[in-house]
Image 1 (cartoon, protein in one colour):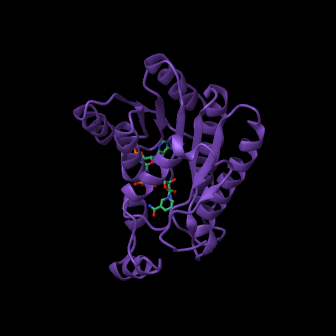
Image 2 (tube, helix red, strand yellow):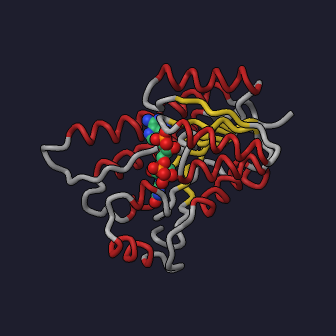
Length: 243
Ligand SMILES: NC(=O)c1ccc[n+]([C@@H]2O[C@H](COP(=O)([O-])OP(=O)(O)OC[C@H]3O[C@@H](n4cnc5c(N)ncnc54)[C@H](OP(=O)(O)O)[C@@H]3O)[C@@H](O)[C@H]2O)c1
């Protein structure tokens, strides 16, 4: 029987590339999304077009009831959950100031509470051999102005990954994070001038933006047989942008 992967935030960007890559790696894939149903169904159609199995499931990762339903629907549809890629996230930028508490709460709710809820369900559902992969960001090492809420949320995600790896001692389930540098997706490109994009693109010694597929390859490694001995790590896939 096929192994089963849940990918949160798989309607667009990195998650979309991860879902398609894991389907090519022979996983049945659950394509989670928040609101872009057409894009999510498009990913499902692409996967089915190459002979794969996939289903789109709408769920807000910051809602305990939604996340529980996401995992229950996966088990009902495919019989197990073997790999969980928690990729969904948002990055509105704002300085640390008194007029942006709502923005801070929103980022923490989606990125950090979302990770806590998804990791909690993953811990409950995964059997021996399972893999949990969360998303941090290499921008943690840069401390750029206006990235405060986002960096705080992703630092929290890295903390959760290390703690959960310890909590799952003896279960033969790995827990890791992938921390990309700049990737050409809406999350990165939106709101930036061409000059800002060009400057950030040149920062890695490899002197280009990552494409979502660059990151999907790293997730494929962690989710597949060759990644079995990697546990409690943050894999900074960033072309040398930061370490
Ligand atoms: N792009 C970069 O440069 C970069 C760098 C480092 C780390 N990352 C991390 O990589 C991950 C993916 O980023 P991306 O660039 O691919 O972002 P993106 O293109 O903006 O896509 C975000 C995805 O997350 C989903 N999403 C947003 N809020 C959600 C919620 N509350 N519940 C469920 N799904 C939700 C979106 O669903 P809808 O389509 O339905 O809205 C979409 O599928 C994020 O965790 C991000 O922080 C990105």
